Length: 183
Image 1 (cartoon, rainbow, N blue to C red):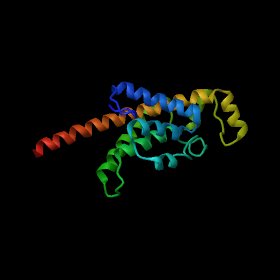
Image 2 (cartoon, rainbow, N blue to C red):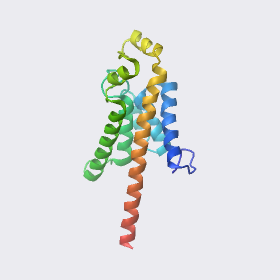
Image 3 (cartoon, rainbow, N blue to C red):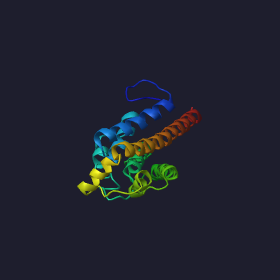
Image 4 (cartoon, rainbow, N blue to C red):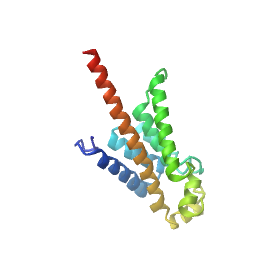
């Protein structure tokens, strides 16, 4: 498996590096969606800066509204970058990306009990915080938000990396089989 540095590392180590990067980015810069996506993009060489910019307002449960977890959204965006297509007529890639995204969603939900930011906060902190309000954001920080939420980013990145790497391996095997048949 390739790392961002261009040298080969074992798949398990690569997945853990991605998870750690997502965790560390969220601790340093905040923004669960963009931090999860950035780690996956960096280590798996996915997309460009456009996707990262597009993810900027998707943290905190979509624009800090407490809805779908931003880390999950960033993970699914990475799946789309890995399996999707920039051609609307490419139905096969659309269906592959949709199936992989659903797998990430289901695994994330099984691990965290919910996909909602507020629900995850309630599990982590015993309550949720309205991060749009400065006093609530400060209470989130005091409750350990800068330590606990990055763990969710690591989890989402780990799940997405496993799914993407498996997809790439199966696609590579299928391409190799097709080349063998055409020879």
